[in-house]
Image (cartoon, rainbow, N blue to C red; front, side, top):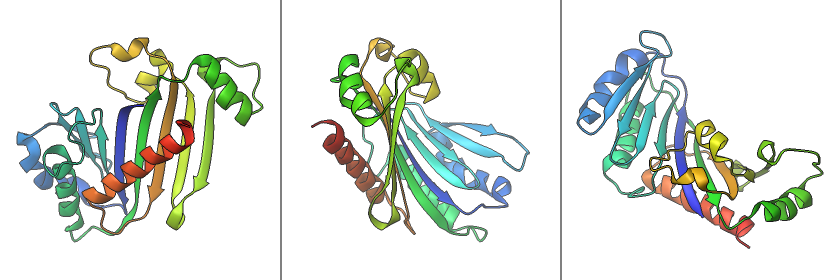
Length: 219
């Protein structure tokens, strides 16, 4: 099991004056990261902080704050990019124009090299679907179900096609090692509700979705 990418989102009601308020919030973090402003001077303006050393990105928008990680190193430490993410959220929540948290979202993109093409066809595709006459790189199995407390869980899995999947899912491959890999490729997502999310909630969701993967696909 190799986690290729992690994405954590906290979604909230739209901050209508976001474009005039966010710069003061993110300015202290520019000593830790470079930044890009997208849709400048438009109502949909937002900012992206890029933490080069950790291959991490914080995407701050009017309706959500997104944390994208391409490495699992120091993922849950209460400093660096993880600390910055939750500090920025706290400052956004302190705005008089902030409404409420809607939900939190976590996605993992996982490569399981232990599954061969033949095993994927037999163990997963033929047993779970009635699909026939296809190209393997065009097929994905999607399973959705409810978890505890109205959680929504979605699992999408197919066979890893590096030339397509790396670009499609924004997966970093700095040394080019993923271009020669094959195996089962999964996107696991969970959406749940939390009034004031913390780094511990992020950690617990991450552990739960990893355990779900292990129980379903590493039998």
